[in-house]
Image (tube, rainbow, N blue to C red; front, side):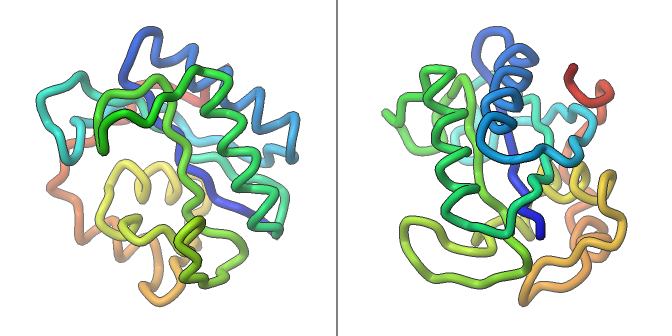
Length: 159
């Protein structure tokens, strides 16, 4: 049982926001593995600072538990939802939960744009080389398809 969560930050002390987000996730579910830190340009609204991103694997197959943990992590860092794709101290997305699919608007699984985003696929591939995204296929193949996106591994897992 595993949930895949993507954490990103592009405001303030980005690394500190990621660390604190991971600490809050660990208060809700076991954090099994965390990728290195990747830096990437913003998607959507591009006139903003670059993001630091990591992928965390949580030891839960409970989608609601993963969602609650993600929301708590965002709240811990003062996340405000004022502008779609705008700058944020911490953004946490539930990417996949045990390969389940869901069209619930509150939590669509898998994340509807994960297959398009190198900042999700590359760190996920780093910590789970045989990962697959439901209805999309192996993460390795999906990552190769977005290889042109500017994503750079800049550090090991946040500690």
